Amino acid sequence: MMFAQILKDREEAARVSRQLRDEGRRLVFTNGCFDLIHAGHVDYLARARELGDALMVGVNGDDSVRRLKGANRPLTTLADRMKVLAALRSVDYVVVFAEDTPAELIAAVKPQVLVKGGDYTPDDVVGKSTVESYGGKVVIIPLLPGRSTTGLIGKIAREDCT
Image 1 (cartoon, rainbow, N blue to C red):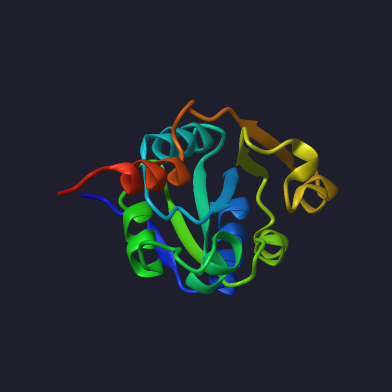
Image 2 (image 1 turned 180 degrees about the horizontal axis):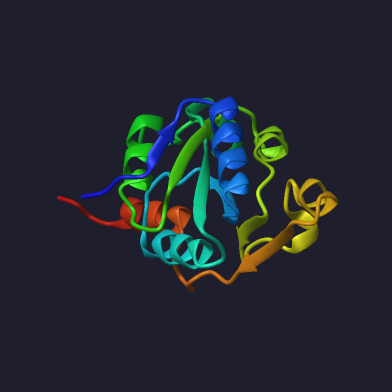
């Protein structure tokens, strides 16, 4: 089984990105919490990967997820979330960021394509102006209907597991 490379920090991610650019390869970047990987994530990441030669996924650190999603999240640890993402065929690189947004990571990596899901509009995408400033583009990928981590958590909470 082949796994994506888990990068140790923003600086390593920037080095990888520079190397890909020097090789004439197109880097696609996306980010998220990826708390419980589901079919919507898998579809989204596969479609993102089709937009370039390599896909780098920025993952919110545990403290960042708690600030964004609440005290009961994440349900899975950062290490587990990164390991699961790294096992997906469509993902080439995984890197953590501690901030609430990936703005600093995007500025360091300078991807040619920045991707977010259909729950965003282009103007809502963090990093849009940075990516467009050097000729990159932002792509919104429609989400699979009815697939969300929040929806799964709600369904699990409603189940009678006795």
